[in-house]
Image (cartoon, rainbow, N blue to C red; front, side, top):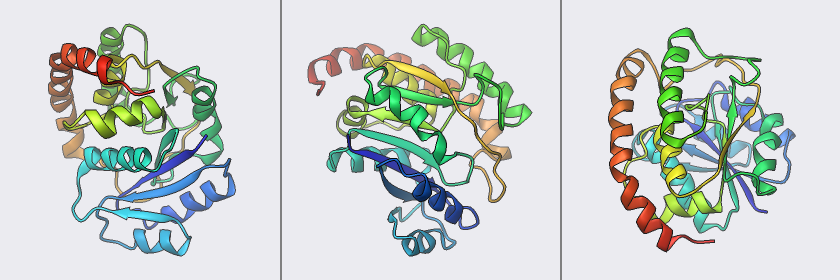
Length: 243
């Protein structure tokens, strides 16, 4: 299978070298691309020096833009699996087989690398854990089974999901909760596997103070929006689904 690791980066010059070196050292036969979300430091230059392809956005397009970019790139280049991998150093390349193997074996369409199943490694910060657990409760009710780490950015997705987001879904993908609900609507099997993560040592998280305070409100609105699309997506994608 063709496997793509999409590294999401925004002003990660202090960490991106170690991230790429880790991926290149622990390479299990996949390709690497960096989605540079309009960094104004030398993130792009460092990646190019390490012989890694970079797609750079001319403006910061948030989570939505980075996801749509790697979905479209993966689809147009015939990848069977795409994995999201953060450029801040929190994810470990040696953990990639844990989220990739279930997809290869056909056991799942979307695999989430979860920090909370074994409670080892970095567990996120207290305030964020409260928010994550709150959304995990509601998302689990909507999809009908328990998901713990609903905001994890360490995920593997198969061709069915790549095709859906690259060709069919044209609306904003504003946060991981939206992705989870929508992939459930198209009949994707979603599982969690335990992984280890590290704390960010440098740079600034997208979820700073303002975004963290706004996230619960925006998240609730996004979930309501997904619920309103349920009937349409199940009906239309059931006809237009690709193998």
